[in-house]
Length: 303
Image 1 (cartoon, rainbow, N blue to C red):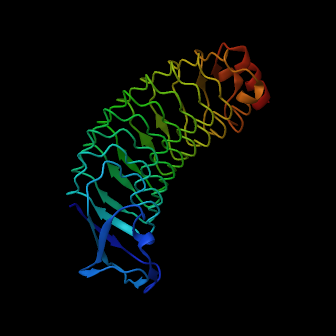
Image 2 (image 1 turned 30 degrees about the horizontal axis):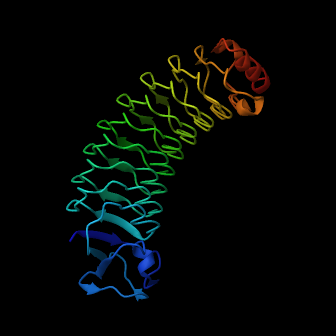
Image 3 (image 1 turned 90 degrees about the vertical axis):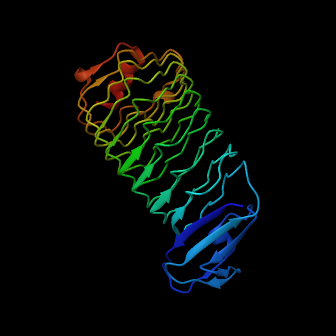
């Protein structure tokens, strides 16, 4: 059996707490508060230590701590994740979580990480340097709405098999930089909203990105208001069908090289709508382009 230690801090002392507040209903486990077996409608105190004792091993941990908004820390250092294939939504909604130990996680068999840390809005850093992501196909919304995140280590991520990165860093409004130099995006189809709302991001290196198979880029950089430059000279957009609002609100951009952008597969103007809206420091003369549709949209948005 696997044991997980967690700590909670209650905003209201002595609040009645249910099992659902502490863990997803779908998992068969015993819960102890310090050394006392937990029962529904128990009145907990601040800094209580919660102990979860799982009765069986799982290969699917999706939704495990879904919306456990009371948890401030979880120690998973001894948790056996050898057979786990799905961790999607595992910490979604853990909005009070300030620390998490995943140092000994075995992720060799993992295929899904989508929504893994969605809305963990109190986490300031996550070290995933030990994660094996060789088999992962879904990373969409993985860090979505992690608004306090200031650093993230993805240096060992293998993204060879990932097809979906949509919303991956959306709403990470405290991140100033992200190192994605090791990312392989050869198989990625969806990048929409990928950096949307990363308002503190000042630079990003996407020179290694292969976008040959990407179909969706809408809202990709929307609201990246601190981004002064983006090098997209290697982007291949031959298969892109949606680009609307792609750079909307990038108010610090002064120049842009999108000379390789090909919009032939974008069928209607609404699929490029407001692509450069709110880029008030961007002048048409400082945009390098050759696609006629890009020119028309620049004239509309930057007039």
